[in-house]
Length: 168
Image 1 (cartoon, rainbow, N blue to C red):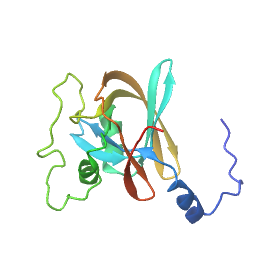
Image 2 (cartoon, helix red, strand yellow):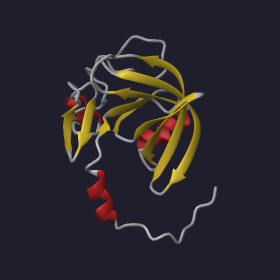
Image 3 (cartoon, helix red, strand yellow):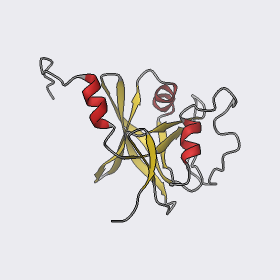
Image 4 (cartoon, rainbow, N blue to C red):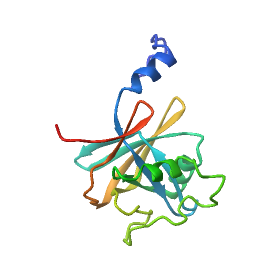
């Protein structure tokens, strides 16, 4: 793959303004292993392939969660239900000054998945397959090894606010 470095990119502020108009599911990425148990709110999550089942997430390459996922070699994408905006804030760090552990008091699903599964979420447990650095972020491709189906409508995020997904 060739990357052409002389492409004229749009201005950063214009890009951010346009991306604020794109709705995305709100997820909490969790990991556990040698690097410890960590969790962070992430909006960059997509399915990648059904053959084999794989997904991707994008994490700031200098973040604690990115380092932990790479060292642990696995992660779980928890798609939050639309009733969990408070949980999204918690795992985004809104309560870090008051909480020593973001998982304190959070209901976890009892499962055989290695990484924590947040109660009510639809969860994709992944083994890390590939990591690609792009700008300030790592694109982490995971092979889906287990699924927990929460069955709830997802929490969405757009234009700096949480939203509910409603049928058309």
